[in-house]
Length: 123
Image 1: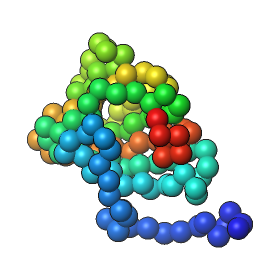
Image 2: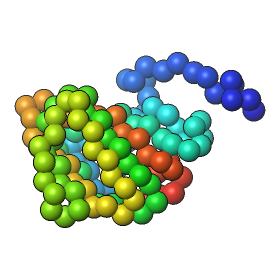
Image 3: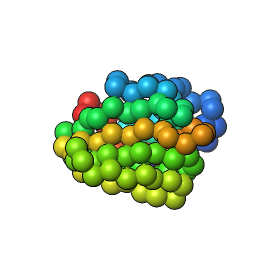
Image 4: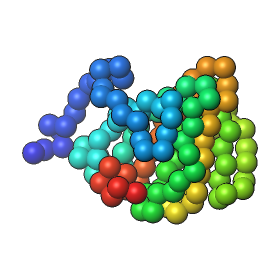
């Protein structure tokens, strides 16, 4: 298969949804699949007010979160706490603990990139 065969158009709301383990009030949609890009995976994440991604880490993937809208309480490394808003970026290397809670009045909307793809390495 040629790379050009993977060129596609999608609507966000036509993509399948999933909720990762340890997350509440969360709806994720994979924008770029691991088998499409091979070296990264891109996800649109939405966390309803009060929803949370419990403290966890990814042993094999670097994670970068770009906040599109909403407000989040983010705790990194079991202690570094910050309120993050639209336009902010959270970079999380492998094995770094992180916790995210939606604390605004509207849903927290994010673009999340994993490298290598988290769906390939389960971590």
